[in-house]
Length: 260
Image (cartoon, rainbow, N blue to C red; front, side, top):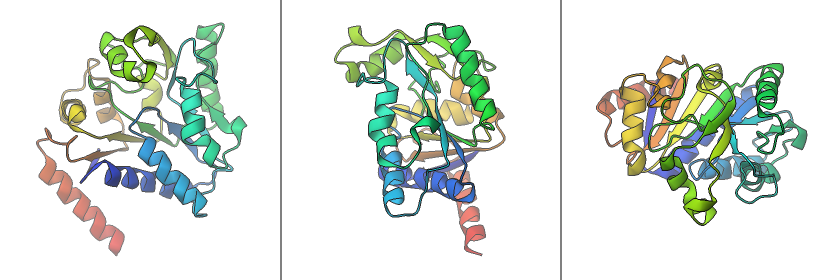
């Protein structure tokens, strides 16, 4: 697991965007896994700038999002489909038919989730999955206690997640209690994972995910089992890490290699 600690959220967002952009350039038909929430906004803004500058072409890219609230349609401002359209898709040249966000209004969720998994496989698998992390250490909507082998499915949200997301819904009573989410097992099958976190409120979760035990109570800790994970955080999110000096040494080695 490569851990990159930047000074602040803006620098970390730019670094994460560069990692994604470099991957897209090497493989035009890239399959990109995307995330929602406040954390990736700066990353998406940086990718849009690169696209507008003629440095990134999304015309052959396929995307898959991690999750969606049950009951929300694509026109609902709180839906993740709406978020992705407004935050990224409407500003780049990715074909609409190449963008995949789970359907929160599916009539048969069990069948739909199987179809979502199959569509990922048919696309050739996800090349890079962008991830945020919850304050309790969850990835996607894989709440504490989720199986580390889980697949795309319905998931009941915890009271903490509902409370954390209530700011987007104008009150805790308006937050959906169910979501469709990629499973931990699904995420672990991606070729690369890019975990991003900013702020001191994520520091405990980051330390558990990176340096703690692998446990279903902190589903992000399962990333320790993945062969190719990069973590990009700001100094506040890395506050509780014990091996920061080593991570800095690794980055210096990377810098020297890339300069040769």
